[in-house]
Image 1 (cartoon, rainbow, N blue to C red):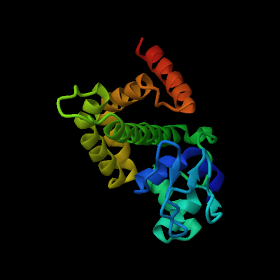
Image 2 (cartoon, one colour):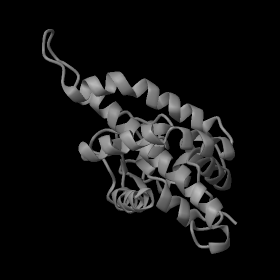
Image 3 (cartoon, rainbow, N blue to C red):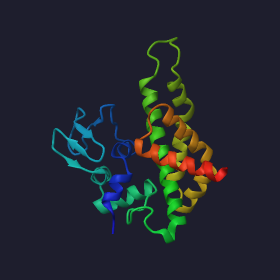
Image 4 (cartoon, helix red, strand yellow):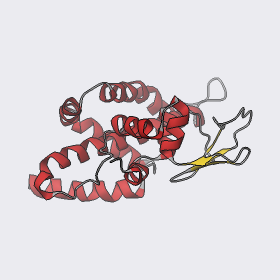
Length: 210
């Protein structure tokens, strides 16, 4: 049985919308896909969307279903596959499967970090682009030029791989994902829930290394 509540909690609706090609501005507004919207009238909230023009309302699964012409169950399956999560049971509730769930959690954290990093770089590319010839380049714009293409390449590699391949790929690129996490934290683009989780994991990692 699909756990839609778990998907709502694990998948940020704005990140999913942007990764699937929907343009969301800094205010969280986008052109509504439920009607012929010329001006952004659909607002992305933390766990749902709402269109102030046509009244369309729903969660990340509803949005994905509309964007790809899927049923809600099919959309949930797509989100689980694309974001590397299990939609049938909450994470870390079965101690006997701790090793397997830990691997899945590691994949989910990597997707979270990579998704947020790509969104941040895309914002930097637009917000800090030079407006006048000869203007010194902002360090954030330079970062987007240097890192965005490769981060998007990593995203494609993860999406095109199996669950086992994802785990191996992430293990082989842990230093890269740590740098992305540190960059998100430095620029203030790290979600509070992710910061807490990663802080705990970093502390545990340090204790094991010591």
